[in-house]
Image (cartoon, rainbow, N blue to C red):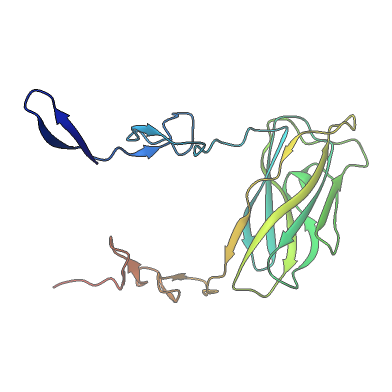
Length: 212
């Protein structure tokens, strides 16, 4: 930054050079708080999504399973949510396990990705639960895809609606199916444990070696 001005005493034109000031989010409550920002930005701060009664999140995707987890701030009596994938032809093959299975819920998953869980005996999932809600079976043929929960309805034991957060999309990237006793190296290949390629500090992919 160059500031030009007139020195009234000497009648001379002077230039003053100043370092550029960093623009950024200077709100310490924001996710992208920048302590080095001298100038506050306009509407650039990102804030955490407030927790709801039901906080859903896809926490893992494998070639045959989508793991859907939940954090509950209220007792839950039943759920319905819809899964979606960017991989064309994704099939949904059923649901089992997790907190829903432990509670004895009847679980069903339709061909369109709608997962439904409820109890015929009045069982519920307790407030404060924070674990896998249900595992949804799937079949798809893509090396990479994004999986999301795109809609949901959740109810209390009395049948009233619970507030909810459907979570962030989950990006799936296929890895090699390494045999037992082998691990994947940074080059995407399978090796015996301890012999796999590894990344150095600069991001290069190398094989371990020793000097005599």
